[in-house]
Image 1 (cartoon, helix red, strand yellow):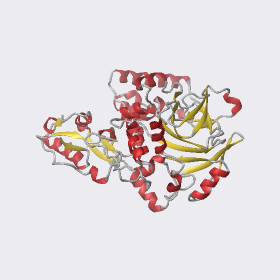
Image 2 (cartoon, one colour):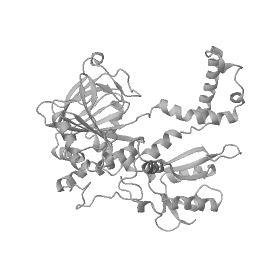
Image 3 (cartoon, helix red, strand yellow):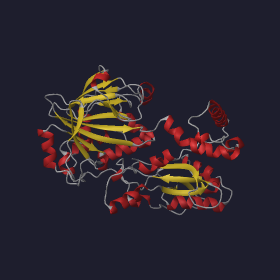
Length: 475
C-alpha cells in the first residue's frame, strides 16, 4: 500500500507471483482497484456504490448486492485466487486445519474431512471431485500479493484487522450449514456461481459465531446467485448459507472480514480500567474501602448499586468536562501487533533515510498509517509510583506469513520466531513529549526547532529516535 514518503512497489512485468507467471491480461486489470489511498481502494471495491451512502444505509444495517457484468472485473477477480492455484500452493508445506479445511454440509451439519499433517494435492483434488467437498483456504493474503495489497489498504481504511478465506465448492454441493458470524462480511465472487440465501438475524451484530438450525431461521430475506465479478456485503449476525448450483463446474469466492470485537462495548472494556485508575488518583471517594464483608455476600445490594451509579455519573461528568482523557491500550496494541505490514515493504525500506535531522531541518513522519500513539503506564518494575509514558508503536516489522493465523502448534524454533514477530515494535517517550508526537502524526511538515518541547536537546533526542527507527525523515 502506498505510504506517506514511500511509493508503492509494483511487481515487475517479468516477475512471477509464487512461481506462477503473471499474464499481460492480469497486469492490465490491476488498475481496476485504486490503490492511491485506503479510501480510494474501498471506494473502488464497492463501486458504483458511494462510500457515504454505503455507511449511511448498509453498514451494520442490511445486506448489499452489487451485480456487475464487467468482463475486466471478472478477469481481475479471478486473478486474485482460483482453483488452479492450489496445485502450486500445495508445494508450500500447507497443513490441514492450519492452512485449509476440507468440509461439507451433510444433513444440516458441518462434516470436516481433513486428513492428518501436510496437504497432498492429489488427495485434495480427489476429495473435491469425488466427495464433493468444499476447500476452505485460510488467510490467502499470506501467499497472494494482490490480496496482501488489498487487505493492508483495508486495514488502514477501517482501522481494524481484515482477514480473509477462500471457499472453493464443486457443483451441487454446500460446504457449511446455516450460521452467522461475528464479523462484517464482504463476498467477492471469483469463479463460477454461488447460490446465497440470507436470513434475518436472531442476534443482530453478533459477537460470536454460531450455527442456526433450518427450522429456526424462517424464509430467506435474500435468495440470489452471485456471478464472477459480483460483490455481496452483509453485517455480522446475518444468517447465511451458500451452495454451488447444478450445471456450474465449481464456485470460488473470497470472504473479506473485519470489525471483530470492534464495538463500543469492546472499547469501553478497554478504556474503563485506565479511566478508573486515573480517576482514583484525584477522587478520594474512589479510594475509600468497600463495606465490610461485601465480597463474601451472596449478592450485591441495592445500596451498592446506587453507590456505583454515583461513581459512574461522576466519571461521565468528568469526561464531558474533558477533565479525563480516555486511553485505549489493549485494542490498539492488538491491532498494531497483528495487522499486515506495508505492502511489499523490504527490510532496507525501514532503514534510516537521508541526513540526520538537525534543529534547522523540517521533518515529516514516514509510514504514518502504520503508526499508533498510546499513553500507558511504564512497564518497568520499580519501587516508584506508576508513571505514564507515551509509546509510538508501528507495524513495519510484522510478518505477513502469520497474519490472522492465531496460535498453532509449531516446533520450538518456529515458536520463537512467531513470538518474536508478535512483539510490539516502537519507541517510548516521556509524557512531556506527547504534544510534539501528536503534531508530527498530524501529517504536518515541522521544523525541529519549533516542536513543542522546552529544551533543544529533547527535540533532537526525539527526532533522532524516530529517524533511527525509520519513522521520520528530513523533508
